[in-house]
Length: 267
Image (tube, rainbow, N blue to C red; front, side, top):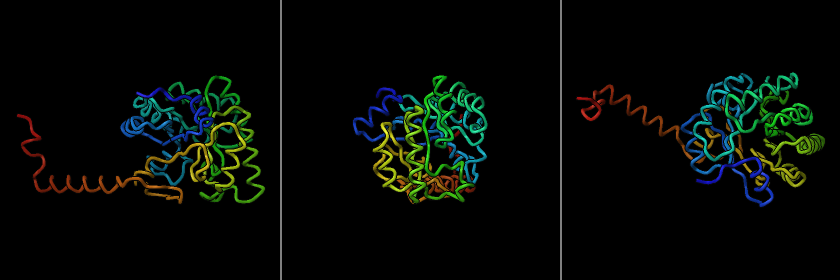
């Protein structure tokens, strides 16, 4: 078995120019497959609100949702760095609440690090989380908890002023002590510039090929996405059709009496 991945390995991989791999997972069986495949990090993202709970955005996800699914995933993970996502409303109110919620995600959910969205407005909260020994993954660009401010899931940083703010935010997050930064849905040239101007790893999602690593939602790469399908998704399999065919065959065999057969009964 490969060695356990830690936040220190993220930094080493950037310095060695080794790309970092990250995928979301929300259940024990999927997390086990992902971990066994050698993925460097698993994120129990607040995307669970859309992929698991069926909401049209991530805003309704609760801390209890995140804790429960992070617990499940943690039971499957041996190698990957496990990151829990702090949902909307669990930070940004006051630093005490933010730290308490991060603590619960690690203590109860078994996360090894936490992620929260935002730039300069999150610095004090990030520093306080770090002060109790919890590594933090930053996240700027298209931050889904800001979807109502952005007017939808739209690319960020195309205008020069906004691009400059994102670059400054990345540097502030680095100075605050995050171990890496997710760059979501920003122009590739901006992502490249940020990556070259910070010493910590950048993890892209819809941010082009020049980031230090990449993250995608597991449902997207498996063809299980029933809602928003951004341009940056690459589908690597079509599990939806396989599942559909299996369910239809089960339905047919129960209806016609061929299941269960003698092979599936006890004497």
